[in-house]
Image 1: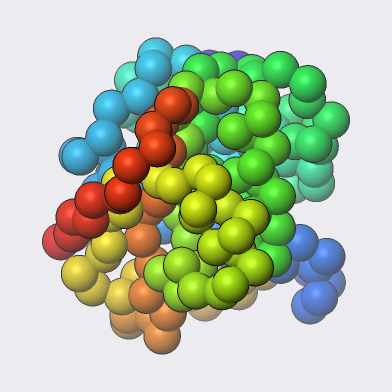
Image 2: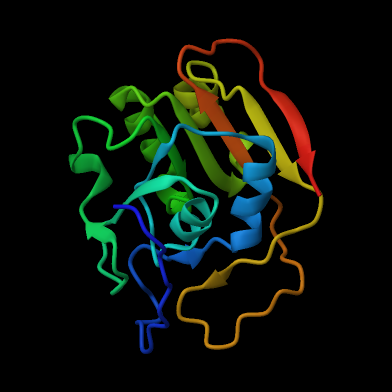
Length: 188
């Protein structure tokens, strides 16, 4: 579904929302788009309130967006990413729930997506299990580390602040067929 996504405030979300949704600040997606290009059609399979989808649409991409939870945003289809058996678009740009990021990447790879960009904590690189399951078999081609800590806020925070976060984030990029060692770059 193409078109601008207008995030709408949602009051009264339960304090322990099951997917722990944190919106991706638009500046994070804009920084990615300065260093990476995607196919004209881009899929956002964990769209939340559409912040990534909106930034992509504003940049001229045709965005196919879905999420497992209906947050009342027009243009976002309510559908579980794991129910897809073929890709909705050749490229994916997403910020999946942190606790399910491995599964999201592996599913996208298994679907045969050409290019995948994932916004994730840099500490995601750690872990022997993840190394065996993901990094050693499906290495990203590039990692774009933010120079400054990015502030993410819970979707139900009535007063989000942009004061610099406590977690270091990066964009991880996969391209189908890549098997070498990733390169790293920095995003100001």
